[in-house]
Amino acid sequence: MKILIIGGTGNISTPITKWLQDEHELTLFNHDTSRPDWLNSGVQVITGDRKNYQDFEKKLSSAGRFDCVIDMIAFEPEDAQADVTVFANKTEQFIFCSTVDVYPKDAKRYPVSEEDEIGASATFPYAYKKVQCERTLWAAHDRGDFKLTVIRPSFTYNETWSPGIHSFGGASYHLDRLIKGKPVILHGDGLGIWVATYRDDTARAFVGAVGNKQSYGQAYNVTGDEWMTHNHIWRTIAGVLGAPEPQFICIPTEVLGKIAPREAEWCVENFRYNNIFTNDKAKRDLGYRYTVSFEQGAAKCIRYLTEHKLIEDSAHYPFYDRIVDQWKKCEQILINDHEQAI
Image (cartoon, rainbow, N blue to C red):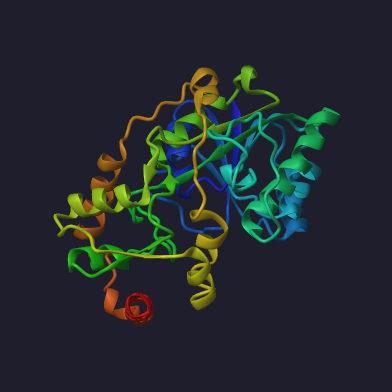
């Protein structure tokens, strides 16, 4: 098959490229002018900026027809519209990397399935724009411009990342906090449910969709099988690190959003909610399998980050300790006031 990947060297798309390059005529559209050393010599790379839509359309329109196009990096509605402009009637199948965040948060029921309506809040721009991208592409599918397959991954990590999401994002300084026995902030009570997938497992779902007519006109959740509380996630990571039992400081999400609005933005819009999804459809149609447990994946990450000295020094993030200290003081004041009132 003649396949185009828009992206192709990112978190999920790197293993997709590695698995497809040996069996297919593969082209990447990528902004990076350097060629990865693992990329086969037969893979064509078209260098360009997908945000420069005139250049994007010119370069890819002249690249000819593809049997399958996989877009891993469309985040804006204009990106999806450019895809339609270029690839309508010029590809058999279009695979779009969306996200499970397109579903409304605080779902009516769990687990969330592909049968549930999408409709992310405008206050969560990343997810809201992915919804708009999907709608543009579904409209093209309905017109017969191409056969659309939508894949909605959950949080997907690789060795170069921290395996855990904390209240302020995914930076690695929280691993340093665990190692040093420093308190770790959890939003809410730490009992919300999260799900994570190692990138090779997620990538296999995309590969399984390529040229798969059963996937035409379908959307798929691609998520881990382990539904884990944030407490459990951090205890697992601490165990892999050989760190002391974590000291958790539980702070209401609303409070975190007010005292650290920039750092806690994704926590307010996403991490605070249960992330519980079905993935049976992807297993049935795409051959998706969850083969790397969270503990195994965390061990891969910790080993890589440690060997390459990539765990950040938590001392470089003084705001974190300031919040911990302020919360402890407020908590003690509340306790003291209550005891005096009794």
